[in-house]
Image 1 (cartoon, rainbow, N blue to C red):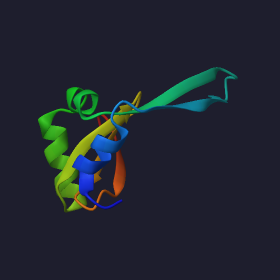
Image 2 (cartoon, one colour):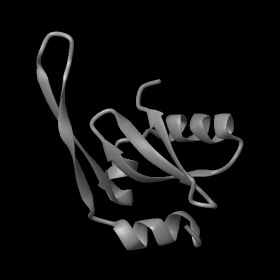
Image 3 (cartoon, rainbow, N blue to C red):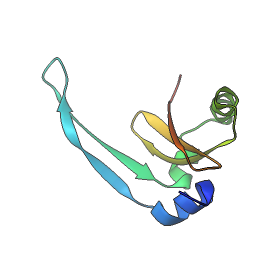
Length: 87
């Protein structure tokens, strides 16, 4: 995608993707979704974690979405990267 994280959020802000449920080894069914939106992504990501992920990736990363376990970060060329929260 051309335009980077700002264009990605502008295009997909508010989009929620509901994933098909999966069943774990205990036969419990889990439902999840991914939401695109900078406000929710920023609220779920501490500044320390943001700096660590950017340092590890070697590029500035910007919060663009989230699901129940992960924040979704995009770099300037808008390559989507998922980072586990709390890692």
